[in-house]
Structures are given as structure tokens and as C-alpha cells.
Image 1 (cartoon, rainbow, N blue to C red):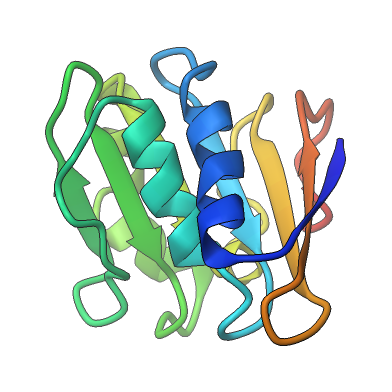
Image 2 (spheres, rainbow, N blue to C red):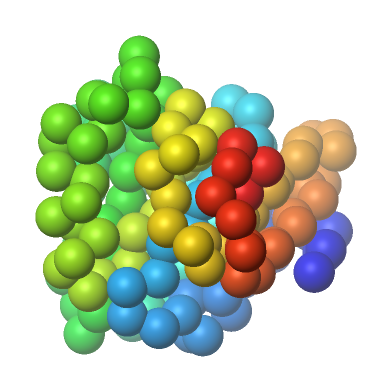
Length: 145
């Protein structure tokens, strides 16, 4: 599915719509350059899960947890040097906790994502315009997830 958004609010709305459909244990891998709108999409996704806490990028902490009916685990891999560092912080434990895992800079850990990971690619097309592509139910694990 591909959608063009023309504001941060519209990008958030796409995340919110996805958040409303996610089952417990879902993993969402976000791809896009710096400033593309990955965190805005995640804010919307949190709203779709019923989480009203202010979602911010966990660039310096690597992971933020937001509690709700279904918890949201928000990862930012920008500062990681290798995929192994994700496992060092307990990635497997997060996957087993039954929450929703959303990962910014997913290209840093291509082999970490389970089958069924939802890939979201956000491309900056201009000042406020974004191309948001959501790819469901990947059959294989790879960096194109």
C-alpha cells in the first residue's frame, strides 16, 4: 500500500490507522532518511494503540516503552554499530513480551526481524510531502524487509 501525505498530521494519521490493526507481538520496521517522518508515523501508531503519552525518538536511549492496553516498544537504531548491539539490549526479550515493536533505522539490523514483520518506508518528497509505503507479511527475513 502506498499513500502520499502532505503534512506531519497526515503521516501520523497513516501510523494511527496501522496501529488500530496491529495484533499483539507485531513488529514494524521503519525505513527512511533523517527527517523523513519515522517518529511522526510512530506517534500516530501509538495513538492507534490508545497510547496518549508524548512519543519521542529514543535516539540516545535506543528504546522507549509506552504503556497501554498493548505496550509499545519504540526503538531507534541510528547509533548502533552492529546488529549484535540490538540483541545485547534484550531484543529477544522485547519480542516475547507481546507488545508492539516499532524500529527506526531498521536497515541497521536486517537479520533481527521475525517473519511477518511489517515494513514501512517513508520517503521525503518535499517540504511536507511524504511517500509512505506499507508492506505487510514479509515471507522472508532480509534487509529489504
